[in-house]
Structure formats: C-alpha cells, structure tokens
Length: 346
Image (tube, rainbow, N blue to C red; front, side):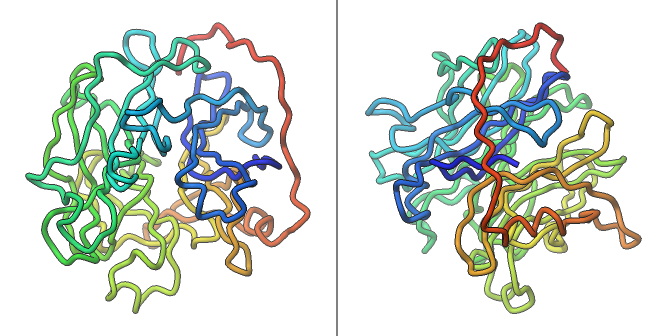
C-alpha cells in the first residue's frame, strides 16, 4: 500500500519495465484541509516497486506548467507506454486557468528513463471534437470531459489507439458518458474519431478507463461514482465504483449498458496489472471510509477471476477494504536513491 503522510494520493497508472513497476499517481498536499480542493492542486507523483506491495518514493514526475499553458492549473490522470523509439510516452490530462479549469485536454511528455520527463515539443495538445463530443456549455454538465487517456497498440490494424473519458453530444444529458477514441501511427499525431461506445447506457461519465485481454476476454474497466450515474440507473444501484464491461475485442463492442460493479466506491480508479507470476490483480485507491470521508491512498493488489456468470470479480477484497476502516494505517514513505536498471522494456 502507498500512503503518504503529507499528501493524498488517488488516480494512478503504471509502467512495467519487466523488473520494476513504476507507479505514477495524482497527489496533493493534505495541508489543503478539504479533500475536494485537491483536484485543482494536483501534480503527478512517482513511486517504484518490485512486488506491487512495497513502494519507494521518487521525485515527482510532472507538475503544472507555467502560465499560459494547457496544464497551468493541474496535471491529471494519464497512461504510460513504451514507444518503438526507446522512449517512454506519458499522455496526461491538463486543465488551464483560461477556462477556469473547466476544459480538459490531453498532453504528452516523454522520458528515456521514467524519471526525467519533458513535454514533447512537436505534440499538439488534444481537445474534444464537436463532431461527436460534447463541448462546454452544450448541456448542464459543468465541465468539458476529455481526460484520462489510455493508449495501447493494436497488432491487428498496426495502429496506436487512445481511449479518453468523454461525453457524447447526443443522448440524455445524464447518460452521455462514452469511450472517446483517437488513432495514431506515430504516437505524436492523433486523429479524433467517433466514440467506440454508445450514450444512454446509464453513465454520465466513464472515468479512468483501461482495456485489457484478461484470460482471453476483452474487458473495459472504468469508474463512475453514484451521483454521476443516470437518474434511472441510480434507482437500481445503491453505489457507484469500479465497473467492468465485456467487449468483442479491444476496440469495441463493449456491453456498457450491462457493466457490473467490480468494487463499490470504497475503492476507485482501478487498474488491472499482471504480477510477476502472470496473475491478474486489481490495484485501486482507497476512496471512502465508513463515514464517507475521503481516504486517498493506493491499495495493495487484489486478485481477480471470472465467476460462473461470466463476470470479472475480486477473489477476496476483505483485507484491502478493511484497511479503509482502519485508522491506524501504515505509512509507506521510504525515499531512496534510484538508478534505473539497464534492462529491456517489457
């Protein structure tokens, strides 16, 4: 588990070198007092682990840019992939003072060693395309959703794909959450295309998406809190949390309307990762305690499996969820000198 005494930690993403897991996470000072203030003070922290349990803290990876910049208020959730040129690519979300932080965009930083990151000079910041996606002011939604990029290579069409949290410009206002989609053949130039899911599936927004092949089945993982479910879905569901939808393949056919809860909102922003033995595990951040108070720490890994109904489920979330209720949490704050190992990327 990763808990910092001076900062809340929440959304995160991972890079695996084959020897170490690098965790990039949103962080903001606990001195802010009110946890809701963290969103407009977020930077990207960095920790490393050999086993997904014990973490060592490294220097922060990214901080907000100097004004004027698309990320001059805060840097939000992203993903990291290893490029064919030997660089690591981190796509991440930024919000700017120009729109009061209400418009989200995607930027890119690259690194040779996962430690030192530089904003890419040739990358054009990506925003929502009004041909398919809702823009600020086109509904009662309070922000323009275009965040949480998840990037992956598809060997079938030999293209890079990016999924983003977005909202359709069609459908019921409280149920416009869709999987935004972009394409690239070089990781620098991206084309926005139509979403790969449909609106009116019960979600106002689908956050922190991830798509993976888990034991031969394509799954879309995303998060949505209870207040941002559609009105009709809130009548059926008592809680929000981490959701799973099964798809035809990595690029679509996701049955979002029948997505099921992998975990309620005591955990949030889950990521599936394979441990060193090849078993799929879920990491998430501890979100709410028994009193509904924000916690803000990254969980230990929890095994997942398929049940008889074809649902991806947690094998045993009890120990991890118990930590949410435990006020005597372990503080893992080891800081050490770090030299990247010279190994081939996974």
